Length: 202
Image (cartoon, rainbow, N blue to C red; front, side, top):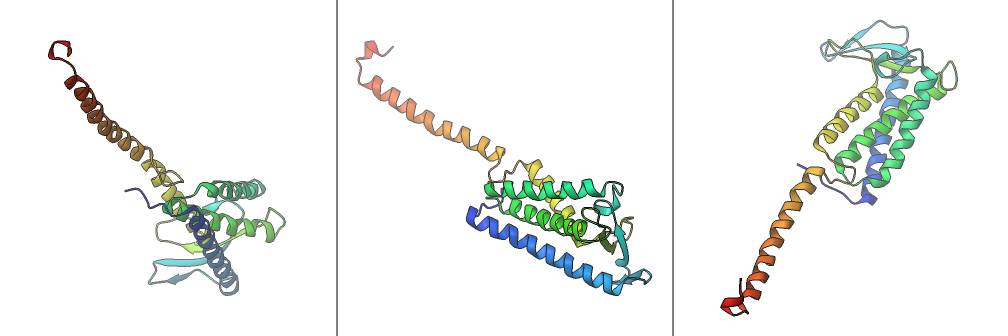
């Protein structure tokens, strides 16, 4: 099933709207985590489904690459710039959602890199969520990036493009058009033969 293709003028506001919601959710939850969890032991929520514990992460999502904080920050800038450039071609609703989630998550984590201690592009991201059997602590921005990555992988595997078209759809259309043309050519050829004497039809 190919995702519906909204108008380009509608896709951009939706993408930026999703990004703003993700950014706001991460910012508000981070402020609450810093206020309520600092100096406190790990707490369990929802009957142990989620545990919360405040950590400051110098690396990428889920704590990877802690020695490359500045590089990760610059990479985040590149991701945001790439999304803005690609957004000009957006017509797919699924791609709009995916890029909105990715943009919001990347912007939230980049904000921590820029504004938090110990300094510009060296700031530590606030992580505070744990799930059972998952060894990493993460935040809503990380979750948003992960969901975006999963959705992008599915769209890539299905061949869905930013404009909502797919290689499979285009391939299915070509034989249909060719089949529609062949009977017309055959009919024209028979009509031409009908106008000739019988001994000249060969």
